[in-house]
Length: 383
Image 1: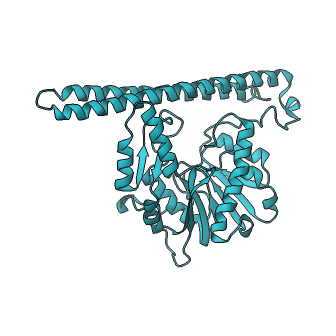
Image 2: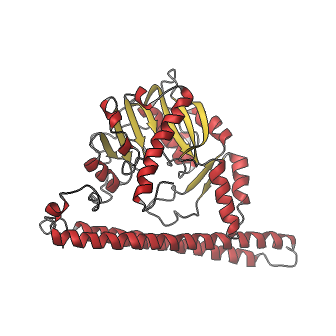
Image 3: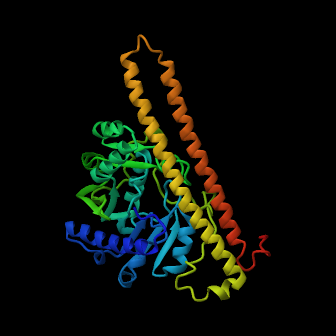
């Protein structure tokens, strides 16, 4: 919902998200200024925190994300908040009961149930007793949009609605994120409100559920850590034998945060008046050209990827329809033919994934080339 290359739309979405947070907190008679320690979970480059500079005079602002490049940019450009890189799975590098408000936009909209449960337990750990959380989910409006798009492409999304009616949560593992930079747990997830009230209440008290409140699209869930709960809840979808309560990484021998990407400079056409002095005229021109190439290529590739995903989804729907017809003619038609068609669509999804991986590698190579143009790159072994 907030991704894209339109700078003004990106800025305005952050401003609107602040309005959405304030409006949603109004459902429990609170405002952002009521909280002393505020945490943006999955903050990206600080799209929302960018608009909270005034709040920093009275509140301590924090943000984390798995994207190291985005976090580095936020650290360099948003000094009124503190930022860290978090791992794709718990734990976070924050002590117990660090925050009295945690919010996000579009994190639980992408995680499968097991990862959601692990993160709900971890967010319980870092939230103070009596503290609140605002988490967004894909509810009815995004589901209807997905269903209409799927039918428009010739697909059959009925299985998604059936899964949601049965389990209350549906994870779509073949979507536009196939082959992207994230692992297989990050795709598209849809929630039924009754599931949120029933399942998430194992961790928190559900104070409110506000439909289409986050950027007019996703639903906001308002949660409260119960003061009487003293032990970290075990994730409901994780077997007890494999569960280790989340907490800070051990100081000796524990895992360290990987540097997934090098630092990105602030926008070249933004307020960085010192850019020529830092990079030199020739290097700056080369970086502009490389960034323009990367942006244009990424925009084109996104369109290609969307086309591939929709085409394969349509073929999936056609195969599903053929399967139903052949089931009725099982005695006279060999089912082997159906299996062959299903295997073919599976191979197409594999191809989409490999194409995404190739694009990811190309993007990483381009960023390395850009980074090599920084001063001192030769001394560090750059080219």
